[in-house]
Image 1 (cartoon, one colour):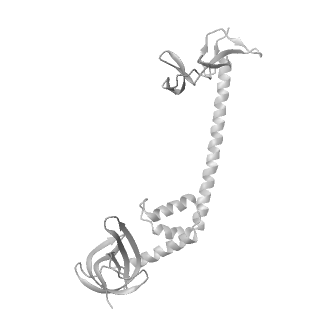
Image 2 (cartoon, rainbow, N blue to C red):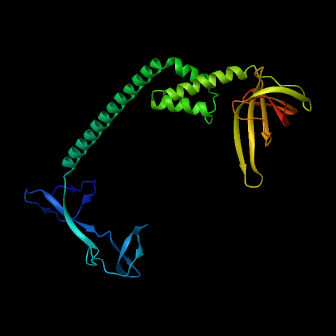
Image 3 (tube, helix red, strand yellow):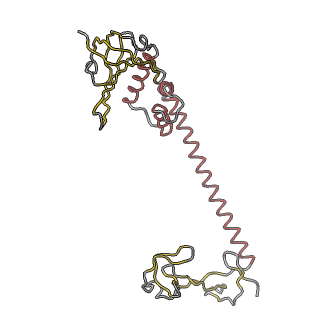
Length: 262
């Protein structure tokens, strides 16, 4: 008799059976996956790990009645010519499937590229303005906003457009900010308080960071608890220059011991 092989190419050396169609077959035993042998005794377990049962219960296996065999299944046997034919057909099917997948991916990529081009054309002015705020640091806020928009191709909201315009305006003003006096100087200036940030400490309580600007547009920073006004107010103060610092490229004058001047 001509040599016979299983579907995975192993030669079958035993006497084959034949199905109703007269084709050679063999009976494959299906091992039970719900039990295993532990200390010479087969018991029901949760599963197998590295060929060994784990989480044993001591109970008999209800799946295979403790035989270790869940069932049997007839499998075809093939001649070398038949096996070569079905293997070639399987390879062809796999190649066709791969080709269809690659074509689908190509269409997706082309569509994505077309959408990106259309998106950038429709939002060119805004994206150019937004990009001008980026620093090249992927961790920075505006870089993150730009990356998110251009990745999702989401239309910029009115709120975002307004925020970008405000940031551009603020940076334009900050470009002209200069240091005031020398460290240790006592100065008298008129400031407008733009923002007050509360910094809470369980040990020291609340401290307030005042971001201000004088009439020349110079940035003044005060961190403390003195009352020099509320956001939006313009007041005249006396203070001492504590230090000059550069923050995000903006020259800022840090003051201490400020007092309102009538």
